[in-house]
Image (cartoon, rainbow, N blue to C red; front, side, top):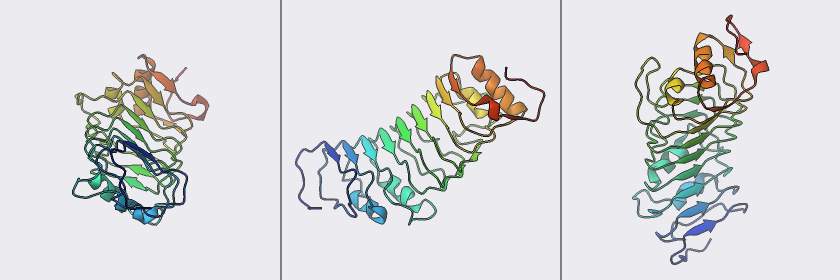
Length: 240
């Protein structure tokens, strides 16, 4: 890819090519939308960012789906990428990457509103404070993470037995076709604003905690998608 910059370029879509490297000099600071999805760019992904924050300081939308990151273990690349992301980012799509554990301090973009992390086939766990720093998040999609079976009680930074919670902006949450068997009670406090919750296609193990969560869902005006016939009930509670 040439190092010649594009003056005043605001949107650049390089998806579905065979790129393995992009120079940090390819664009100037006017870029707002960048997509490099479906390129074998792999370990060279970091070459398009600037750790000093001088490049992409107006970027609002970044899509890096299926960019062949299987060579990087333990989320190191995603962590480093985040450290280079601009504070202006509002939409981030990292679907199809080889992430195994979503830890804290990985997603710390304060203005991020829409987060897409679908088809993370190796993701097994969402750790504590994973979403804590997303102060303006409105929608999180984790569909088809087929190995995802752990959702930490403090993923949003709220104690599971606390009756207080921060003034969050999340209104849409989707875990369709994952491997979750239970959810923590922190989601109960989020239901006051969540209007869409998709839990379809998970092998739920229905205990008292999950019953309380679902009871809150059914009692509020929340679009709720699930698959009742896959529930495995260990209690006498009924969801009918």
